[in-house]
Image (cartoon, rainbow over all chains, first blue to last red; front, side, top):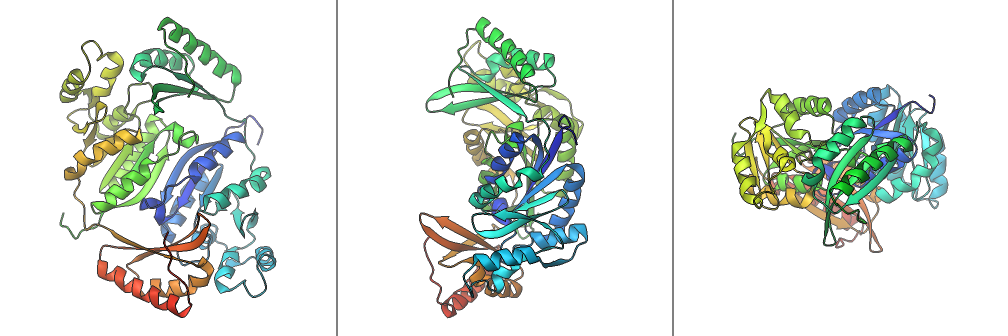
Length: 249
Length: 249
């Protein structure tokens, strides 16, 4: 895969607690920002319940339509943690004790503490590659292009560093934001013209209401800085004409 | 639809800003908690980009596999707001000026302020039903079982009250949380037994690290309080044996 290829990923959030609204997912944003920084664009995110056939069917769609799939959740020790067993079924692999993971957790816990509950966390698809966990010991794992991470945000974050060299990204996706003291309807037509003239730049328009300030952030995204710069000049031109101020956000 | 029927929904978050990680979605949690309270269970959530054919194809899947679909985002005045036009294509309806919405916004804005940009916000699928917006005027809309809401969280929240009588839910899904001073591996086996004996209660186990406290919250979900109570008694029984304390979370 050369550096100029576009590389994309799907994020699969596994967990009833997100679907019930009890827990606010923050892993999507963490993963998406990190993936962008290494040149991987997130195509889609799905949130699904802790139900085996749904996990299996969804993974079988996403792994074929994306270069990478990142799952979060369901790799702990309790009955509702069924991601590892489900991934085994996806790839037709045995779900068994992973020797390297077993050694890691045996060394991590005090003697006698590596109990039956914890031993569930070293059961994985046969020959899975481990993703090390510097926070709480229990590793994640990957099989082919599917990478399985835990649901606890602080633990997930701490595992990304060790994963970086296993993901081959394309050109990093650059982003530039310009915030304006205006409302969207004032700039909608001009912005449409800029988008029409720069079809390969992703231009987003987001109203904000923040600390008493009201405005619009325009986000320009592309792999090429020069294309972002062209768009930005065209925006600066039309806001000068309209006497619209640039503001900090 | 009788009250005992299970009613489910999908949430479709439309927006590049969520996929890029720039914006943290909070609408999923808002919608899910509200839907649960009126007896609608969220089956799945998808986040997709502002791309017409993806919106159309995804809606065509979700509207057929769920009783309701709620979309967020893409109904503002700028070029990247394409939800209304996409929904028109989904249902084969004209995308045109909605007279009632036009009157609402004409009255909402000062004379002369209802400009071309803003007029885009009253273009909708023909004969769409409006969802009133007490915060910023511009209404959402529904066609059949698809309900389209804005992406700005405070505006979305303010629109749910007016929507309540248009959604026919089943039994409200009841939830009870018991938090324990323990780690998941200590209770995993006992909890599996409780789940096996109470297959129609959804039992979730979630470790927490909060304000110096470490523990596990067990969440019991069912339409029947008596089933939740039975599970809870069984949990209280095994934690008594194991000398595990109940804690506030």
